[in-house]
Every structure is written in C-alpha cells, then in structure tokens.
Image (cartoon, rainbow, N blue to C red; front, side, top):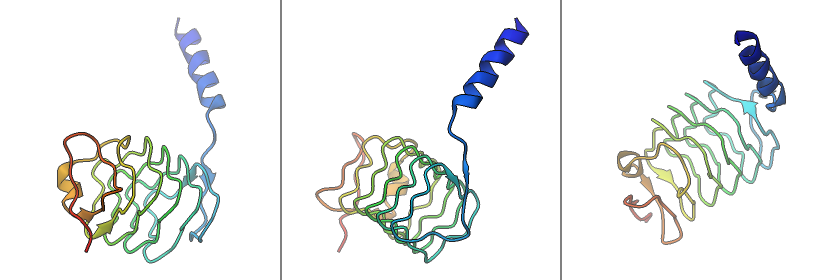
Length: 144
C-alpha cells in the first residue's frame, strides 16, 4: 500500500511544471511562469504586462514595484510586502494573498474576486476604483 502511494506521489510530482530559476531582477513584459522569487527583494522594479502565472513571491519584498497589467494567476504572495506597489489591472485569479502586506497599494481595475486569503484588513491599506472587483463582503477605499 505504501509503495502504491509513493508511486502515485512520484507521478503527480513529475507531472507538475517545474519552478523556473528566477532572475535577480524583473523587467517589463517578462515571461517567467512558475519562477521562484520567494524571499527576493524586487523593490522599485517593474514587471508591467509580464506573465508570471504560478510564480512564487512568498515573503518577497515588492515595495513600490510596478506590477500593473501583469498575469499573476495562481501565483503565491504569502507574506509578501506589496507596500506602494501598483497592481492595477493585473490578473490575480487563484493567487494566494495570505498575510500579504498592502500599504498604499494601488489596485485600480484589479479583479480580486477569485484571489485566496484576502482580508478586509489588507484592503484597508490599498486603494481601488469602481472597476476593482472584490470577494463578497469586502470593500476597498477609492484611490485619489
């Protein structure tokens, strides 16, 4: 029985896409699905319009990062610092935002409706607009 479970686990792991080695910096329009940026300091960098689906940004420092119009579907931002970051019009379906820090984070036109781990306390530190979509029961202050 243990051998069958081990074989099933090994097969499941072999069919998962590998995490790509992350470059030291991000650039506008970069394509890096499933890259591992966990713990990286990407402050003041720009990935506007990039494809980072499934990327790992856990505990990353993304202070003042330009992240607008990027594809972060299924990415993980657990415990990431998004203070001052611009997430406007980004795709965040199934992204994990558990314990992410939002302080002066811009989210104009961002669709958070299918994001995971998002709380009202986090959104209180962000701002959005009439096009920002949220899970039921949550609100975001309007950007000036």
